[in-house]
Length: 135
Length: 171
Image 1 (cartoon, rainbow over the protein chains, first blue to last red):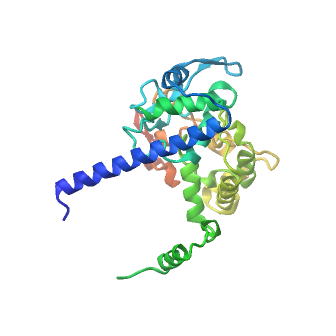
Image 2: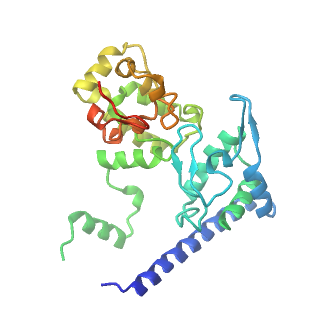
Image 3: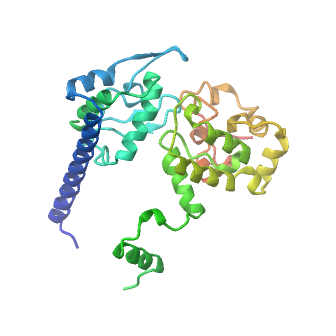
């Protein structure tokens, strides 16, 4: 049987490895964005962008990333239309976050279009990733 | 140690570095997992048998504007999910419910919302607004699972109904 101590070490180990995986994944995407012309990324700009409100002319709503994910990314969010729970985005709370590049691309595409009415630029995506990975 | 045949094949494939793109064809359960994985991030897994195949086709062809959301997916995933939904649609299986869904639905109509099916509307027409639309814990007919606790397993009988704030539904 596993001792509690071993289990503890194993859990810490798992957490560390997904944290490493998250930063490797983010690093890979940041390099990709820079190779396509983005400049230095900024955590602060990422945070501002996250909370910035965009007017959706079709629905006359103000929308932002925080409309669904809330401004506190360590908490559960809620889908604006269906009300379905969204797990926290902060990697410190949900260790699987930011570990799958395919998912990151998919959700940037979908959610930028919903929020801004267009896809995000590489600069915007890089800034947001910088902000998210530190949470 | 007992090793299943599938595991052996997998081991063999890994050892000889056979590309994973050559994976075995997916069965219905595999496709259902893809459907659940992709679609339940935003909403409950609506049972495929509640809409005819033509409706699923239209929904999967218009994911760029999915009831106001962009739910776009890569072509391979779209194909897998479409196949699952059509293979298990209302037209694919005969039951008391699917027969009624289809019988009440004009042939030339391709509804995108389960809640707009004539049969489903008819089944809910006696339910006062305060239980559904005006109920802050339900809000919409699209939120089946708020009251039909076993909706995702495809069970919609009255025994499984609990209306938030009101309890059981007595017909």
